[in-house]
Amino acid sequence: MIRSNADVWVVIPVYNEEKVIAGVVEQVLTTFPNVVCVDDGSTDASAQEILGTRAHLVRHPINMGQGAALQTGVSYALARTGGRYFVTFDADGQHRVEDVVGMLELARSGEADVVLGSRFLQNAASVPWIKRVVLRTVVALSPTARRLKLTDAHNGLRVFGRGAAERLRITHNGMAHASEIASVLARSDWRVVEYPVTILYTDYSRAKGQSLINGVNILFDVSMSRRGK
Amino acid sequence: MKLMIFQAVLLTAVVGFLIMFVRGQHGVRMQAGKRLAFIAFLLLNAVAVVYPEATTWVAHLFGVGRGADLLLYALIVTFVFAVINFYLRLRESEQRVTELARAVAIRDAEVLNRDRGLLPPRPPVAADPPA
Image 1 (cartoon, rainbow over the protein chains, first blue to last red):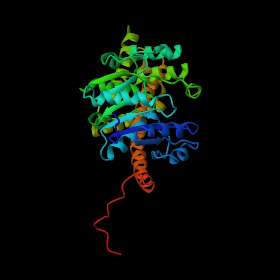
Image 2: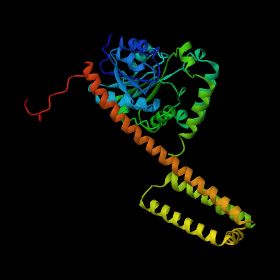
Image 3: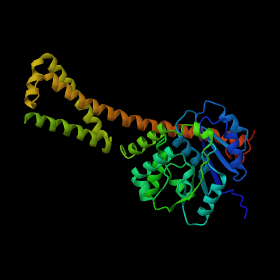
């Protein structure tokens, strides 16, 4: 069955992705008519690239971080009429549109209010080993990820039903938003389901900070996000 | 033995500050408390300048050898207090900037995307006077 997907909003946070963003957006637009790109104060031509597509563009006047960009995109999409599902999608081309289609099917079936993409449900072998170790450690150290039985707390691919999206308040502007979302989900009574997705580790996405150093940052953010609250 | 008492006082102060500023509400009482503490701090400074031996006398009371050492310890506690205070304020102010920037970004985007034909045109405003 072919759906129009007019009730779906895809939110793509963008920061300095001029080389790939237009291609990624065009690909998403073939399946999903409603795409909102949040340009988080890029210093390159990302915004111009997005203006060349049929995607909505929201520009942060200053760089505020990926968490802030996600919240802005979701807020913008919620203010439009007719949105029932809200998808977060990475700008660097590492997510596959067909995975979103599968996740939406699960959400539409009424079995889940929130669907999270996971690299580890099936084909973990495609994930670089160092990243695998770091991400596994994050999950093991995070009480909320354990409670929800999540296998992958830092996957950018997520589908929220309208109710869940409305109550989402991402306050961690930086990369700690992933753990913040996980802990919000753990405290809620939404049904959260993971869905196996394939991450395309292209040379481009690999070059963009998929490193051990970033893993250290994620670990630090996760431990800090439990304090000072 | 006396040293242990002093350490206990110091540690209690540190933990107390932590709990107070991480958990507590930043109400009028807290504000007034901070200001009174600051005035007391200034007065004590004046006393210490006029009577340098006074700090040593107080230090002995607490079981610390010299007044200078006591000042150092007190300074550390104050510093921790200040850092936590600044951290919390910075976070709050960052949050406000985010809210502001988000409101501006969404408002601008609605105009931009309407001009690009992605959003339905604005319904005419009833209050507009006829041209």
